[in-house]
Length: 322
Image (cartoon, rainbow, N blue to C red; front, side):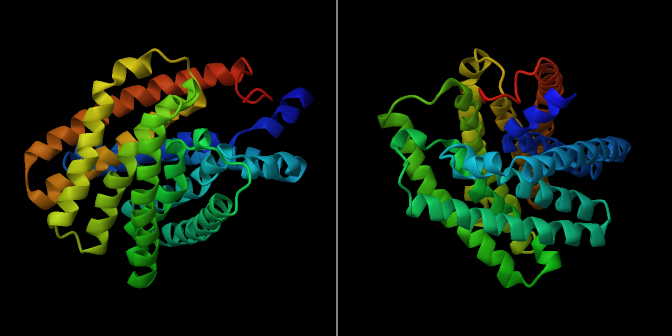
């Protein structure tokens, strides 16, 4: 038992990628229930299980902060790992969206407030290190850099209900402009520099998330009115999803790692974006796309949950090698 507690020193923030994927799945189920009411129970079960897991992970990471502060600081200063820490704040923001959709407005506002403050703090921590760095090399750049950026684009989705609209536009602007900047850097890195490490290859799926989440957020900021810019965001997200699907053979050859959870949230975001597109465009075509992506996401998450549980049991994750 004591040995397992010591292993929490190596408990990575990337574990919260599970919460991002599971909460995304729950929100997708909530959107599905708006079309097929008989699926409403699935969303409630999904969010309940996700919340239980979130509390467990928060307890473990809190223990790490108290018992192993040096390891937490090392994670925050690591050129790659620091980008996964905002997965904690993003998880809170996504839970606030789910709570709001289920009618728990007060809990949603509290969760959103904590998540938004933490997200902004972590964003500026990452940006500070990007600007005033002394350890970054081109090889350190990878799609995980999108994580602290995507988090800001998520804020307005329910932020428009919890705070003045200007605050949501502030977060949206940070996320949108830095998405364009970081995307340019990453495309250059992927094409002209050494290949990504094998365990980081699944993070390529994160390319789907900014335009998909951006579309959902932009709709919220514009009272769910579809315009040309919204269509650009949606269809670019769809184009990136097709690119990842074409490359699926590459991903399936990889050995399991926590980074596999990078598959889940971007797919969830694209499924939700497609549900929203179906509503605002009044077209069943996008509904079928949403259901198709949603089904793939559900199968992947069941598979990843089993693989993660096995890896934890065999102590292949929380050790000094990760």
